[in-house]
Image 1 (spheres, rainbow, N blue to C red):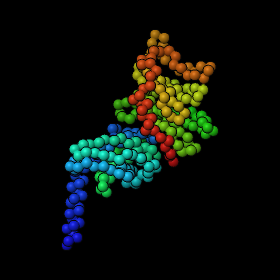
Image 2: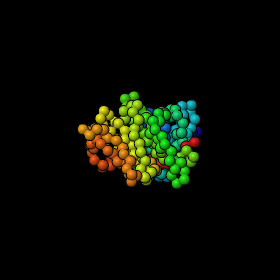
Image 3: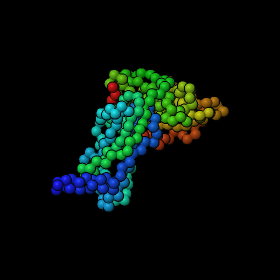
Image 4: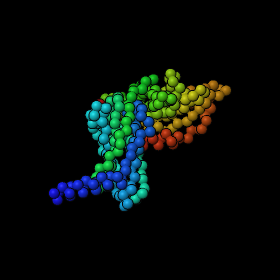
Length: 277
């Protein structure tokens, strides 16, 4: 009987602790292109009355297909310990695409697991759907002796907008170096694309009536530069490859110069070479 009451007391204590530390999860949209970064926002609220600090591998995720089959982990999540005063909350964003083997089309259930002092706190379930887009252009070029495939893909993250995505991969090595949006596009109009002498990809796509977006992408998938243009009295902008191997935007008028678009370029920190099979 004594052990029964001890076990009951321990269970009540764990329930109490769990109620004082709340964890939540959020994904800003439910439609993602295959291999696109999936940023998951995880929030921890500390109402325990005392500071908390995590240690070790304190954060993980449970990802399952609709049939309940678990998704294997491909890479280890390296994250700093979490220190949180009582009454405070903290939200962190983790890109789960390079961490877990999300390599098939379909719906996935995602939960976060936060471990604090040996107690696991599990978030509610949120769902994402991974889908294919329409490849509107693709070309293969050798990089260090291996064929690398560059593609532009039309995809609609929601029912109200369509975007053009860049993907760079090495099929023979089962690696995807990058898959990310270059911005909104006019449906059914193929973007212009040219390679320069360095092997960088230059893309110019229409984003609206009379408006265009230029992007320069390295062979490893880094979005180096973006700039917006509009049609002018000299006509619409177009890509031109010079005899020196340099690609320039000719015609039209720049709306913001050649400065980096930091809001988009910062997203490259989320991108890692992702194996797929």
